[in-house]
Length: 432
Ligand SMILES: Nc1nc2c(ncn2[C@@H]2O[C@H](COP(=O)(O)OP(=O)(O)OP(=O)(O)O)[C@@H](O)[C@H]2O)c(=O)[nH]1
Image (cartoon, rainbow, N blue to C red; front, side, top):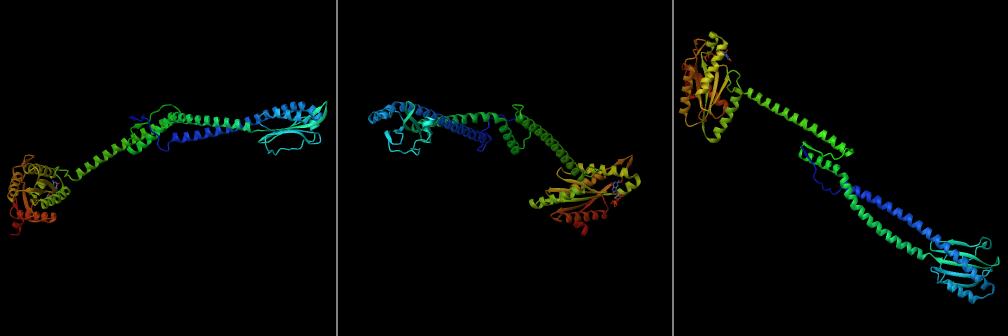
């Protein structure tokens, strides 16, 4: 049993990469949202603090300039405003008389604010009033002397410094976020590769098995979690497939063996054990083809037993069978190892003699065969009156084709019968 434990390199579109991408996207969005919320809150709080500070300054300045307003000392008021203008982000500071006329003012540049320039109507009753926009804030403070309204102070401040600080802070935060995402990316790849390793291995193993068709492999189980259980089920499935495969192989082998056995039986004569007529026909075709191909001489003997019917009639069928077996043994002992001896049926036999150096070899073999069959055969105490008559035909001399060669040897055998049995004849002998 093999198991896959080797480190697996993730493919281009791997689960690890996809999960890392998704996690990073989620992390980036969360960080960005958090940053935006924090930046908005910080901006709002900082603006409120600046507004509060501006209100406080406006009150103090209103107190300082009230005597100057009462005594119409514009120069002193101007100096006071100049001194106050050192406050950063100040855009405009104005001292107005109750009728709205400007008594003294300091302005950092041309007025750009869209904020109101007319004093709020109920300023005398409400005290300090303020307003803020995206870029600036404005504070109105009543100037009193012993509870009598003698003027109004307007103070306008820019939010540029606040925005600049916020911009710097954002820059630092975004840089830090980018660094954190980079670190998180490396970390996520490592963690997810480790966490998904069993799943990735399982996928690789399935791929390997699909390619190699080797069901003996098994997945390594690391933990008993969902993936571990998946691996266990996968292993069980592999085990079952392996068993089915082994059963199938066994069945195929048995069927193959049975087929071969059947084929052997189909080609064998059950009584004598010699090849039968079916086998003979195939072999004759094959040897004739070889004979033509190599330009060799071959012969076919058609052998018919003499007086076999008499044996059957006189001693019974079983004795006849014994005679057939003994004849088969005797003839098999005489023929050459490359010759093919077959029983065609009844008391008929055929002998294929391939690769003959000359015709004499076959003729001598026919005589030896006849002599072997004719030799005294005693069965059950009785001498069998058995003999053999042979028809001998040559290829390509007498015929070059199977049926013609068989007919030629058959006719020659009948010629030998007519000539008195226990002998052989060739086709031309029959014609004569
Ligand atoms: N015992 C036995 N007899 C068989 C078998 N097959 C056929 N026979 C018999 O074999 C005999 C063959 O007859 P023939 O060849 O005409 O008789 P024969 O006496 O040999 O005649 P000749 O060839 O002229 O000598 C028949 O009696 C068949 O019944 C078999 O398998 N076993």
